[in-house]
Image 1 (spheres, protein in one colour):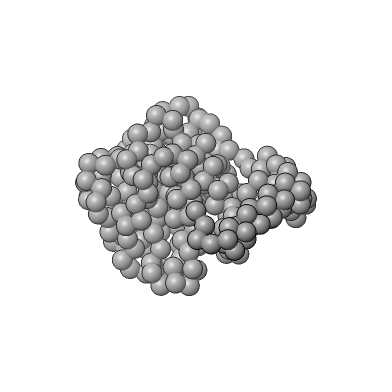
Image 2 (cartoon, helix red, strand yellow):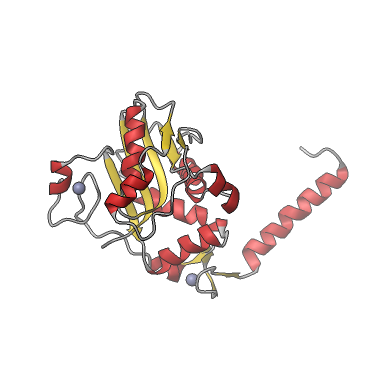
Length: 241
Ligand SMILES: [Zn+2]
Ligand SMILES: [Zn+2]
């Protein structure tokens, strides 16, 4: 409904301009800068270069292993999460897309990143709530947005599942994880998250990149402590060693 004739006139004009722009003006890919068939900022040629994680992977930690099942390390020392998965290898085009998304504010990529993640999720996962790895408020203020929350919001639309913006909170600012090994990363994030409102729930936690899984272990630990029944941590990119 429009409040007056001018609103109606310009409302229709903007719809027409958008239709014209989307259908007749060729789009450039944000990654290769070529014109072509571009979907949410990425062309089909760049999209085809995104490499899925090669199977088989461990049913728990999602690392590539020789045969299907649960890896020795998850059997010996079961992590707090029920499942950790990365949708695709964090390299090449996907690395460029996530970098542009995170550091150059190319937020149009959120839809394509959520789609890649959605396609990799187990179809039998019965999820009650979607949330994301939170940033400390000081980092959120500097960056202006949380990349994981944008992907989670889009994923929620694909899955038809409610997104919780307050299920996890980062209570302490931590040093960047870059350059630290898994043990140091675990120590760095230990006790820096808080969870609430997840009792008896099956929770999906979204992140942009899974590196060693240390953050995933810590958020899963606090979610389980707060009563979560099942925790699936999923990242779009996964560093494959
Ligand atoms: Zn391209
Ligand atoms: Zn494992």
